[in-house]
Length: 184
Image (tube, rainbow, N blue to C red; front, side, top):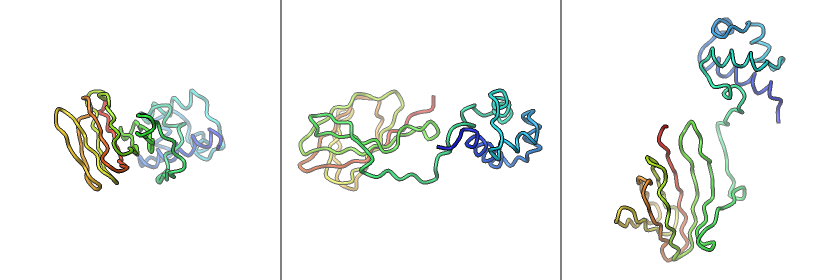
């Protein structure tokens, strides 16, 4: 893991360049000297909390935007790296692939169900939408008194803030689930 001051420098430089700012303009906006900003960007200086707050305020950012690791442009999630959350005696398995992200407001799961398994889901918070994409097998979804039967290649979108039930068909089923959360 790299030192925090190096991560701060990388973030500051990336954010400055994304906004098309020169070091002179950044110094003007933040009240931090151009020389100090250049040292921070090169990872040669470990800025104080006060300096970071000045930079964050000048750029209208959160403090954590300067210290969080940058998200990679590509993320691979090997199957072997995921562990399921299990219900229905092991017949319903949910593998978290991409956890909730504040910027995108969604999370992604792989769901595996054994033949004949039924799983009743509690309502999600108001405004949550659920997207299901059946990769293999078949799935019936009960929501609002209607049943929707999906086969491999089919997809469904629904308001998930109401009770809903999944029923696996007569062979193992694999579904990709995307949950999208409304802005606060």
